[in-house]
Image (cartoon, rainbow, N blue to C red; front, top):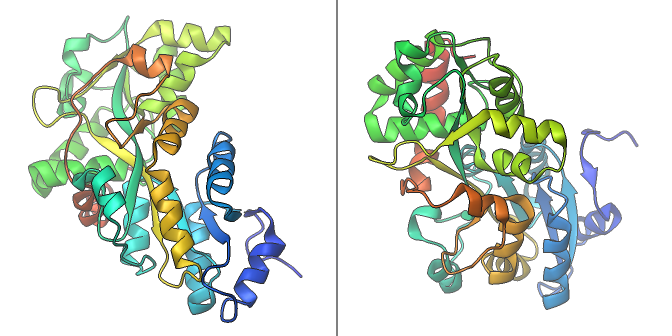
Length: 345
């Protein structure tokens, strides 16, 4: 049979299909969890294996791009075998919320472990990453790029590189600017950044860092874990890149550096709700939080968890924006409208 979405990667697919076919007859206590994940990090294998070892609950996993997974869940409707959706970026989690895919979860453990600003009624953050400014040390002064607002300053004309304005990372940053400054100032900022482009938006965050190092642009924005990944690389080319660039934690004197999240929630039609809650609670455990930090260069959301990641240690402490992730959810759609009006493609 031809698959509707050939790019999806199926993990123990047969078991997942059986779970869907017999969702109406199996016990709610069945020791299985059907996970739809848009996280594509190899280190997550150990994360899931540890959950099964601790609980005896087997994970059937289907991986895919966020849009594909959301469409799949909608198409499956009430018969969906999916229990939990994991993805990255608040704007993507907001989309799942807006489409009514998540179910509210009440858990004293999650409420006590995850700070209030990093959770909503129906989805939870389990790790964070910061949106930092990367600059070419030979072409730009650090003092000129201490804030996100500075990226719209005329002195940086022809020096700004960025990925697409439609990418969730940038949409979440824009949502935070709307929340802090209002839509009019946010649009003025977007227009200023567009006027400063060194090239049309393209590529991912690693591409932006390498373009800054090569002198193609003077400054860019990147998620911190891409920076940390290059810092931990043993490749000479990557070491050369990091020697050429400097890193700024933006907005340290005001709102703090914008952070984004990796998170997830229990799906509305989850056939294994008890297992789903256990899994979400597990992701807030010390063990799981260390996997996020040490394995993928993210910060744990549980502040008491100590990490052993040399790149994160070298990047040092910073003031993070404490804006509730619900605000990012609230302004995600507006962010795209503003970027489109500003010509930020």
